[in-house]
Amino acid sequence: PAERDALKARARQLLAERSAVLVAHYYVDGDLQDLAQETGGCVSDSLEMARFGRDHAAQTLVVAGVRFMGETAKILSPHKRVLMPDLDATCSLDLGCPADDFIAFCDAHPDRTVVVYANTSAAVKARADWMVTSSCALPIVSHLKAQGKKVLWAPDRHLGGYIQRETGADMLMWNGACIVHDEFKGLELELLRREHPRAKVLVHPESPASVVAQADVVGSTARLLKAVIEEDATEFIVATDRGMFHRMHQAAPGKVLLEAPTAGNSATCKSCAHCPWMAMNGLQGLVDCLEHGVGEIHVEEPIRTQALGCIERMLDFTA
Ligand code: 13P
Ligand code: SF4
Image (tube, rainbow, N blue to C red; front, top):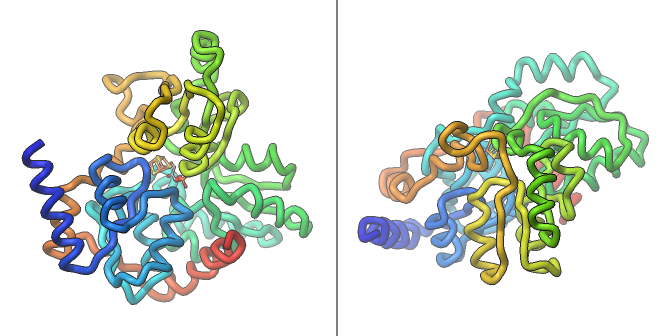
């Protein structure tokens, strides 16, 4: 703890000296979330992280999350310096959707509007008409359906399936998944719900359909946090990364939070309920990137300009 406090103090000092702002996702280490909160940065879901980074006056952004979040910040603010505590922090959805294969898939279906999840590379976004996050995918696809558009969706099949069931849109889907949420199990959740009949079930839509079907609330990380604060219940079963519990406990201290069941446990399954890439973000990495400028994100032209369109379309739609 003494070492942690020293690193925190150093990070606080460097953020001030470098006039940098820390933008953190709810899944990263609690210390980083607390630092972001206390130093005037933001802790949020991927949509609000993008908006906050774009709108903040600071010329250096430190993005604590996974690579696509840093890339999105850089695409929106090419003149700002965007740093990350660990540039190797990726995402299984991004890894499972290589740009070349994705572009060939799009080329084979030119009649479809291309909608990609935020969790993709800049090169994939460069080929997309729309980017969405879990907090705005539903209204955006509804909007496209109302315009009579057919959708090509990538890469998360669970989120895509949920949106398809809710909107009835014609969606051709890429077959990707989040290794963390894919592990939540419907049958085991049913058993846990029987033991806790009054618990409300909160589910991130990257989870399988059998889990989403049992949810009282389905939504982005920010939406699930809001539900813990506002829903009339004292007990919740939460199907998302356990990094989220830090903020939930702070925001609703009296409430009981139970992890939704996964097939394995932390001894047998590395990704069960905690993203290994989000976990790469630490205090030491934060200090190092601020102190030595390591971990800087670059997005090459013309990819950056091509990717900007689909992100701005989403931000305008949700403004
Ligand atoms: P949110 O946009 O809901 O924060 O989700 C990002 C993510 O990677 C979830 O696994
Ligand atoms: Fe990607 Fe899943 Fe990690 Fe989110 S939790 S960053 S979707 S691997």
